[in-house]
Image 1 (spheres, rainbow, N blue to C red):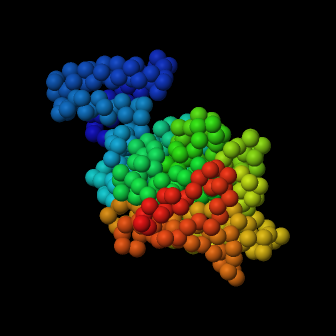
Image 2 (cartoon, helix red, strand yellow; image 1 turned 120 degrees about the horizontal axis):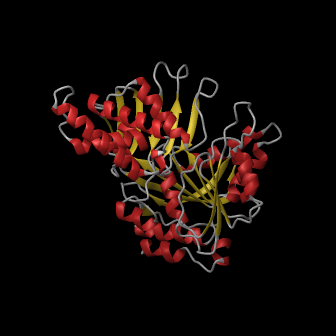
Image 3 (cartoon, rainbow, N blue to C red; image 1 turned 90 degrees about the vertical axis):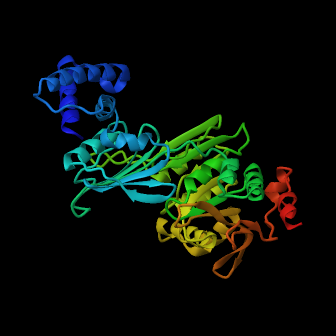
Length: 410
């Protein structure tokens, strides 16, 4: 922030305090106040008492962003080509475009970083302090904020903003981007219509949430969908959607709402489909119990491959307690999960689906049998000639996956 912008911003803030108005709720009033103070500043600068402003329009935008938006970061948030922003320290502000990171030339102060975080957390009702040094929250536009403070970090506040994007809304857009082939998209669309339970796997930033959104765009118009997440990330255009997120405990340590609690509550809400944004711990048991009751569902999980995702989902429920063992979990995962879609990102930032496998429902010792339906062995996702063996849901929906899969084998 330049000295001129800092002075104008402080003058506007003094006027706001004096007149008792709320600029955050009135963008027009904010712009008017900024114009007034900018004119006063320019008059004084012409008299030689203050430095001149080279670009008044840019200065006005910076002041408005500082007052009503998120200050120096607002241009990055407004840029549709930027996917993520993170701050390792006041002079280390990074952005990512198309999966590739770059260090910006932006330099902030420690105070500016803290002010930005506090402003971002205002609308969420969440907090970060010594007693709660981590925070996950959603920004007003749906972007996800994560903050860690010292002494968990070595010296500076660590801030990550994963931007919310509405660019990709359905499977056809993923096909257009080269993340998926048309044949694979048609197969996945058929799986969604048949009520298959779908597990989306991949590492961080591979597009798991985007894939869930795209898959859910194929649901039938009359379906009631209930989504459960730690912080809101999914954004569905379906007609009948209830979205829920977790809640942190209060300063007194009460009022926490966990993912396990939300999954249990969702079953009382008459869902036609349950979607869990991501499973990491014991909530995987509650998800499996829900899916085992015949409720169609989807979720995502961090894993290195589609088969690793099945193995991980077979292990996480053991965290729920000593009375849970693999003799229950393994056959339940084998019977519940119908399709696994694995996503990857390469070193150039290209995101794509590299595997689609179909568990058979059977066990081979401690392993879940699964047939690869699509694989990207040479860089292109191609049918393997394999077919799903669990066909009851397809038949009940009047669908035949062989019509799509044989087309590529011919």
